[in-house]
Length: 142
Image (cartoon, rainbow, N blue to C red; front, side):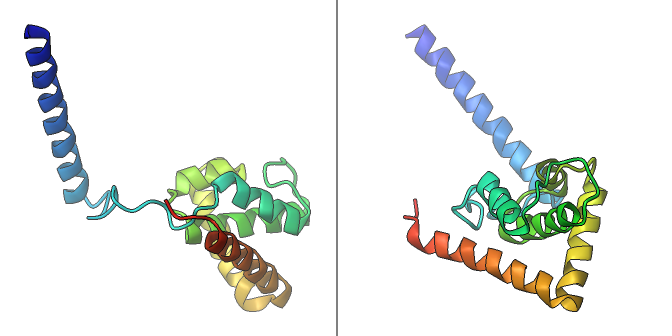
């Protein structure tokens, strides 16, 4: 009986601390109101999105070189991950193989510029987005 009471007290304390943490995160605008209720916007795993982009651009995003295909693939990957997931810039930087969040932000901004100026890049982005939507349609929602 004592163990059960101790466990319940511990559980209530943990729940209160989590509630306080959530309130602090909301008040500092680190998370929005429905952050914990809504999953990422796609059912497709992040690694599969990266693999899809690597296949379309025929380059490895994580490869440490300055080959044009690799650079374009990194930019596209950063843009797609920002648009279709709720990853932070730091997390996107990790997935695309760059050092920090500012580089990821740079890749996202230049990808937007490429979409406006280069039709071939825009076509590849639309192809990737179409694949993601197609996959999303045929996967059962949980």
